[in-house]
Image 1 (cartoon, rainbow, N blue to C red):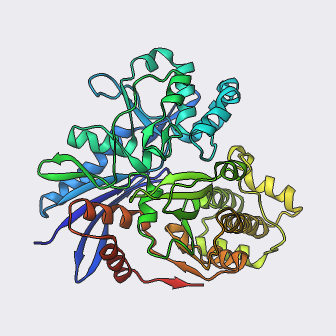
Image 2: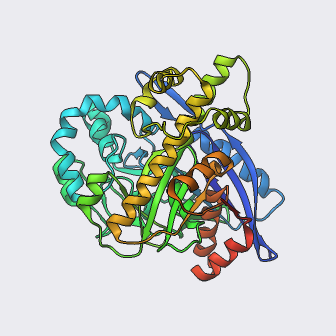
Image 3: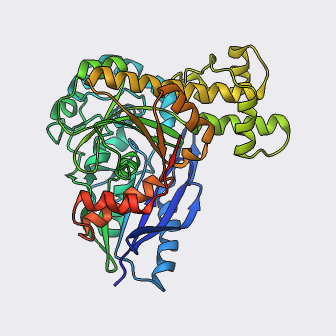
Length: 453
């Protein structure tokens, strides 16, 4: 019998639905649907239309099920955002979009200043104004009536899975993005909860690969529900010597630890994130802008030129006007909020060259990754000997080459759909169609054509 699994990858820029199966010793993945993640604006905030997304997804899944048997289904997605549920486990509101917190956080500056150090010292991870803990502080202050009705919060992937299976829980990798879940002691932090007055709104946390129920005979599995964790599950390179990068809208670059010794002060000083992996290990990484700024620049360049430009054309423009000495500080929030990115860049590089501006972005990403590499070697006293990049960003060959040059390390790329593959592979582990990590890595390597720089 051929076992087929459906993997859904929620992305801020688009949602993708995949059908996978093992055939001839390889994982075959077919994209069934891709659509812009539904969202809307209400007042000064923006929200995900999560039920509309589910309806679109299940229309595709149910269509496939008319002709093919599906063994299991699993969802993954970006971190931090959540769906509030009432006492009957009904949605109270759509989830707020995390990037709305860049502006919304101005309403809780006093609360952030008063609690930031305490929160960090309790659960050490990268500060971002959109971390779940700060979203909840904002919601509690700005919408106290709604907050008072919350019985439980769940991540977006857990909400979608729960709608199918009737069970709403968090999964470890996604819980680790909240800065409320203590990833060392494997519990929601009572100290943070008590200090901030959040109450009993945090549900059970289960391991990646847990079967939470079924949908009309199809197992509903929580894979590594955080998309970065799913992506990292598809990386087979030696974790002791590899700088891992999941490159897409965001650039998640760092290392994997198999122990629980976290140098909190060094992590804090350098503002690195600590997040969970599918197998309980931890990732130490920088959550930095990836092709988010490249996409923003693409839209502006096309508007300036009055025509559509392919990604290959943009890369050629950057290559022909490149100055390696000029590199954007991609961690600066101003690039997110400006509606004139290329004009901002022109002022910084003292040139109106569009190619120069595009190169400035790619140089900035590569330079930031080199900093991560240097920090990881210093903080964890290990020597990194290669870089492994996965995700849609591997299509940007110029950026991959710049990363090889900036780190002075060989770069290995692929799989392109790393998140979908990782989601699939953890489902296969969860329903015992794969029996070990060794078998899992062999299967992945047998399925992927790698490229080297």
